[in-house]
Image (cartoon, rainbow, N blue to C red):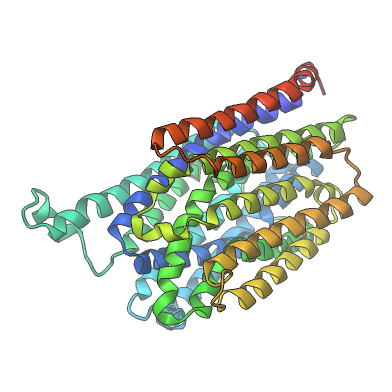
Length: 499
């Protein structure tokens, strides 16, 4: 049988083709957005996608993880799949109908009364993404990483393509009568829509994904098992609560910034924070990629004799990679910051805080195996609800203040405190119920070394940009050398391991 860590690494790489490459391509849209739209407009984009994050969690209500769990336990995995699929289809329709009827009222509530069409477009995006999450999860469960990646890449390509068409081509052409494309732009572009073209592009891309997944949806006979559905819901609903609380931790600060800051500052602050948060998303990209492969991997290897040893190794190398991402990002911030427009760079101090915060979140995800494998998913809900309370309380206290922790700086520190405390609590609870011999000395050691090297890099000032970058990147090479020096023996052992 193949080496399990090699298999996990290989699947992570394939999922990474769609996730890392796709997210990076989307990441390269940030220079476009932050140069074509002022912070107040970009704040609208950031705000709406915060709503999307919450509502997708609600509309999937833990069914992805339930699919993984029950597909292993049930004899007929097709029934598990179609039961989850029909459940999502019905709940999505229930969500869409009132949104269409009350779009103006909803638009008034969130202070965008002149754009009820934004509500409709966002609702359709949410509905499509929620429904297609089950066919995508099925591909992961069946280890069809190649098909998963190809559909994701086409989806991302469509999104980027239409963004470039509407925002990079039509918008400038519309505003410039001398442009060769001006006549076409007058018919194709409406300046009143503005930032809404980002939503339109996303909606078209979501429709493309649904069309491409249609063979996977209709390949099996649709069958709804009510008894199975009830058991899946009992398993999944605590994960819904955990996911909702987790999304509060991840994106709730952007919503709170809007409503806790003065109206004349709120949208700009949300826009600046959202743009700079995208720089720290380099860490999130890896974590999401890892998560796609790791969740089914953890379930599949739970019954192996050396499962806990494998989990310990996964944790250590996960932290090593995250430490490299943190150090590489921060010592190269001189040129990375160019990805956001100059008006947004006042928010750059949040980046190192958010990078470490997301590292802690990734560790927390690794630690979550103890309650997912034991079926005690309520503990995940308890932990993330605790995190949500920390997020809400600290943001409520700090955002309106006028000191260092005021505005988005308070949001960044609240995120770090939330994720780090969740990580520590989960570790101690988990070790009592599902002990794994994590190599804490090396895990903490690598993290400390990366932080120390970053601190050292801040003292490098030669007066020459390229010289500064070269010297700082020597520190990154030093870190990689130390990792190789300490891990060489363990890597040789892991390379020969079989399940």
